[in-house]
Amino acid sequence: MIRRVLPHGMGRGLLTRRPGTRRGGFSLDWDGKVSEIKKKIKSILPGRSCDLLQDTSHLPPEHSDVVIVGGGVLGLSVAYWLKKLESRRGAIRVLVVERDHTYSQASTGLSVGGICQQFSLPENIQLSLFSASFLRNVNYLAVVDAPPLDLRFNPSGYLLLASEKDAAAMESDVKVQRDGGRRLV
Image (tube, rainbow, N blue to C red):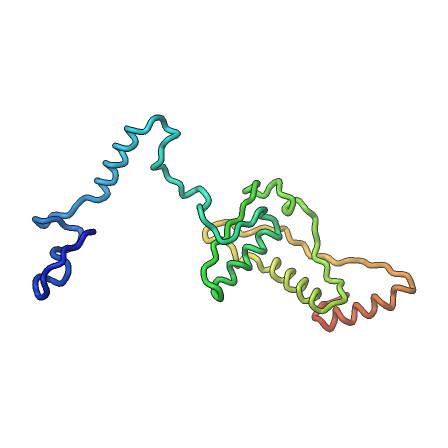
């Protein structure tokens, strides 16, 4: 909008008329004008492939701070935690590029992976306990009006065998795991 400056003390400040009105008091039909301009441009451009005025909201953004290739468990985890850091670091534009948007043929969805918790380092034990809890309670991340997430997460245990020689090391690991909060049967 162009504003006309009046000498000091005249008019209603810097604006000579109400925004969105022309002289004479009537308002412009901006939507109608834009629609009219679009029609003129479309009539000039050849063919449908040159339609520059089509809706592009379904396309990925042109600019991003981080692009993650692969929307599997690692890609989505990195994207989630980067977005979670936004409150501390400011807005981070994250784009996840995944070839299979249905995840019906993606390796993560088809895998039979597990979350091992039989570690000897407390940090690894805490990380695996957190991961299992996160997946068990993942539905708080669900999208409104969408069906609940079905990760088919089925926690089960491991059976480990050891020789007499290795049994002492395993017993030491079990103590570290119990101290770290791991429930063992």
